[in-house]
Image (cartoon, rainbow, N blue to C red):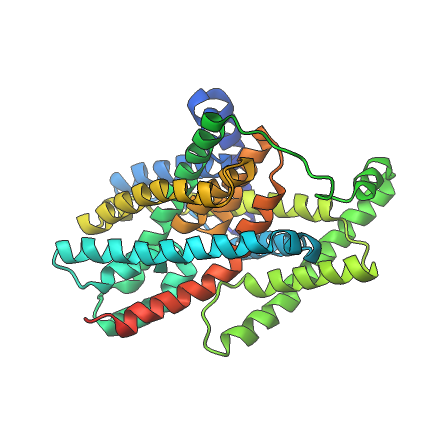
Length: 398
């Protein structure tokens, strides 16, 4: 067995990432439906691990200790995109998207409970395999696992991890094809807004000398790390109140605060383009590491109710995406938001961003989608989902 440390694991993730890019270029079906290369490459390694496990061996032991840092770095970079000016423009869109996401989280739980009851299981099994792990992700699932254990769902932690990781796979694979179908069926195209990025910033990057580019990159990395550091304290403060939130929320809030202070005062001279570049690199590596570490044999060994629930949840979110597309405006941004909606309602916001980023790389920018989806998927939905989960646990008869 090959034992890898954190650096070796990151290097292997890089190989998996570029393998994904190569497969997306070589296999037309993958490129046609905009499947994220990190998901494809990571799944290849996960399948190899599954084959080795079937023979009674383990081919590699990964050290995923850098995975949380990569995730937080990416969402911190998203926070730096949260300009108050753009928020004012899309304020109504954020509220609508949150309402749709919250309504769908309730539907996820009702469908999950129906499946659980149909198999004679505890009804709250469906809530755990519903919005707790699909909308909330593995962090929310593990955080709520003790509550489900006390409510009568045995093995809640294992169920949470399996459901969340399977949801990540389904969200990454389903979001791109559904959004692509909307774009092609309706003949949608991107319209680049004049205020998406400041023109002078883009010009400054183009004419900058090598030393200036090095300084800008170094400053961006340091600012990102400081925001992550301060964000850890903010997250600790929030969780001390009893609210369960992903670890990246604090850093994302700090990034948004620094961005808006810089917009008004110009103290930091932020290069949003450089911060986005760093964040996108972290996102790709994070997804590759997460997918490589997926134990597919555990998913195959799960009970039929969990597998059936995942299949029905995937079908439900694909159908509900029609509602999302229509309510959000029936335009190109709405189609991209639909792909992101599937990504974070089945997996994580990182999955949603990967799906949307793959779409915009092919079809053009979608600034409204990249403002609305991260704000809802990475922040607001966690609040409403925690209330929904708590409500089902405390008030549903069981």
